[in-house]
Length: 212
Image (cartoon, rainbow, N blue to C red):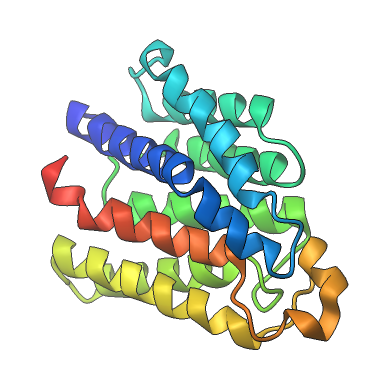
């Protein structure tokens, strides 16, 4: 695995972490509409830890790096977010062990592994009004773009566009998992906070990619 591969993984994780911290209030406000309002706080505290410990993480291997991120997150994020995000990073780490380079296909495989981990840990799936409703379709679109030979920039643009469209579309769904599910039909009409958070994170990662 090359230094460029590691640098790309570092960039994605650092941007994700910084966005979670920067958007604490926005994510919390979104979650407060039909949830318990702790999404912003939980993510910010977990990824604050990642940023604080950033220089201590080993970077010889992407898999080891992602495993350390998972442990840092799990040690700080409370509620359901900690196990879900920790599992996502652990699954991505396991997939990184099996690839020689972090190319487009590997990125798709790592995203799918992360989504599968969240599915299993959260007992959730597409249509349950969770972050999976943005993450899975966006990953599907990324894979499609790679398959048809789209340029890296086109792949990133399609990935972000699909994440945003699908996050917004969760407004039409009734929440089936998490605290929002207690609201029943009242959850219809507002987008899922986790899905919107995923869209915002992907938008930031892709928009700033060329400058990293």
